[in-house]
Length: 305
Image 1: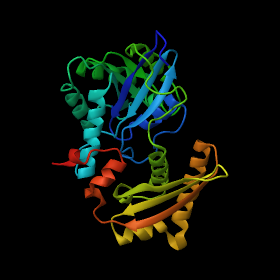
Image 2: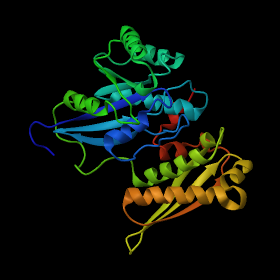
Image 3: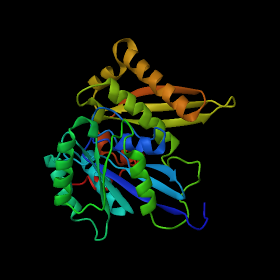
Image 4: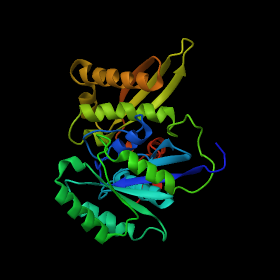
């Protein structure tokens, strides 16, 4: 769309892990384009969701949660998050109302000071249904005393409260210009990566403890069939032989359940039949392989100490 009067721009969503960024992105887009689980650090790549609001096209960048990095993958994820904020036309910091100003939030507020001059940062306090009104007002004042946010919103990304007002405000803040994507496109994430992220989400929900962060999923093959269905072959890479057994489960029960759940979601998203085939392979050093980072949309060099 190139008509006069249109607006378009990039909006970065930043915050601590599990603050609700993916949930907010999915609400804004109206479709599931980003992993949403109860576990932290599940968003590894900067996933863009495209939203039309009036004459404005909003391109949301859902960044990995900002946390204290320990491993190469952690460092690459945090660098991607700050890169998304630095490159965006507008940044929205999402904070959980019931957790308040945590040490992690304090670190983010300090780091915001080092963003390029003129960067506009809005504050969205999420999960407002979990706190009393007076506590919410006190938190709002505290945060605005700490940083000059251009605007503050109170939302519940899960229930949709306040999200429309936030979307309309963002739409009015974007620079004038033609739309960046076709009108019917909701994400610029390749379908292969979307499929891999869907399977990884189901693994994350099914498995526990540290294992989900020590595996990755790659779509090895995508075949369009004559009957309109798609055959998708994926490899789940784990770091140890013991992890392979956990992913497979007793008599293959875990991998079957993951495959069934992932296939159902992909069929709903794509609107057609999907034949999903999963393999589990041990790859001890995948966290140190450049190719794995490229597959996740991260820069391998950003993981250097």
